[in-house]
Length: 68
Image (cartoon, rainbow, N blue to C red; front, side):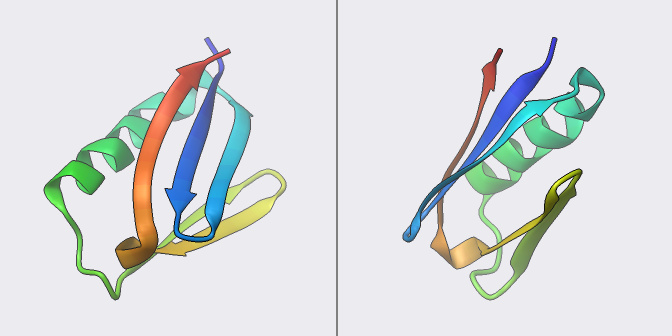
């Protein structure tokens, strides 16, 4: 089932919409990494079919998945 991946930072929320189910494991690992904590100066970059999103881990306030 396709899903939307949301990244919330100090600058707002960005969504990668209609991601294929084959990417779900990757998305779930992002949620787990955020819970564990990552170095604030590391940059999370996600490449997708419409470009890329980059967010410093220190600015990331939430990551979640919603089924569509």
